[in-house]
Length: 112
Length: 113
Image 1 (cartoon, helix red, strand yellow):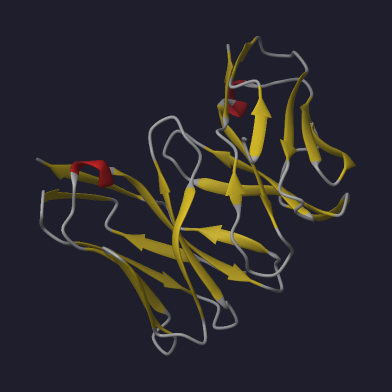
Image 2 (cartoon, rainbow over the protein chains, first blue to last red; image 1 turned 30 degrees about the horizontal axis):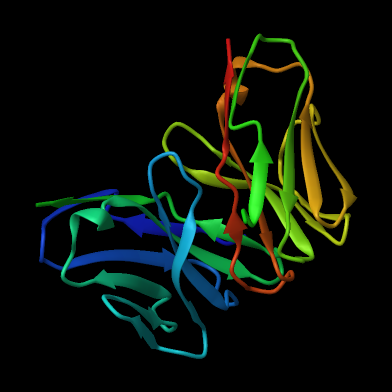
């Protein structure tokens, strides 16, 4: 089955700096890679996603890159703000399993 | 309007009891899920239903029984609760079984004492 590794587990940055979170997946048949943000006491919420036929996608301060050959995908947040502080999850969707497999999460802290 | 709503938000109960968590989505989605999030924040799929039919049943003890009366509802019933069942349980839904955005509820924090 699919396995998703996520690094780092914790990340602390200064406000205004960039943050990068990396994930790797094991099954080359995975074709959809979403990123979720989970704030304290809330459910995960999609912030950006990318499909296997695209290498990069950007939405304002956040971007995701996908390297299918290396089976890596990364989340980039620029000009971080304190409200970006949360736990971020990457995930991979494998059609044969029919569900999202999540990474173990990254706790991002943005210091003002 | 809340897209995916689950009740209750908090549930404290004694070992051995039976409890249910309810979930409803008003998005018109065909697929619904239950996820368990442990104390280390790890999110793990438990069940997936598509149009009221069970699609995925991960290695979950048979004390956990999902029930989908219609495609807008997926309830989770847990028998003989154990200490290790303490976690946050999330209901989610998506448009279909293919890779699409999953919308999560706010979670139910279950504490077994």
